[in-house]
Image (cartoon, rainbow, N blue to C red; front, side, top):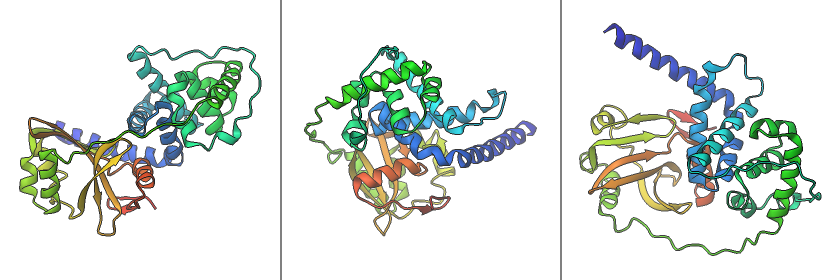
Length: 308
């Protein structure tokens, strides 16, 4: 009993501390999300990197000997190190920033191009892409960039010029792939029907007893029983669930009666059962970016969160 009290107290304190930490770094979260998006070359991979960065940046606080004086530097360094580690795990060379003389190239007119930013991951090494983004887009100076990517200021300057040269010669002409939906997936169609009818019992029958339910950077539940006691304790929200494509992936958009995005969901299905259900309800930067690309307004006030 005493251990349970201590455990619950620890969880409560950790949640409060994490909320306080998120409030402190909130001013940098939009830039951080965009950085993660472009350095990975994908909004989906960028979202995963952003989440891992936030978890790590909070979790590493006890290891700090002194106060974090530059919070933006701290967040971007952890994001960059995490991305480099991911590249190394799949045996991808991170690259080096050699101090070689390069002709100066003015690339400022092209920095607003979405195509330019979205191709960084495919035409630059991870270190080159990071240096380019950090200095030309997110306005770190060469000394700061060198500290983040673990190089030298001279290497950063040379790398930026090489990156600008490479990007200035990229052909952005491309065709959009034809996408396939989940329209023929019986489990997804049954989920949509149950959700839109407010039929919780039928909806729960679609889940595996051991289903993993996650609201990114919000909460996690590891079984249908935990879902019933937690996120579904008060039933379904009474909104409309519709299929959509988001950045090349089929998703389910939960819309309010005012046609605003309330949530974005992804399900994994095996043997006709939902084994994983992921919600982006708490992910402000993700939902705002999705709303912009989908041409749909985002719901800004939805208890327990407010993004106003």
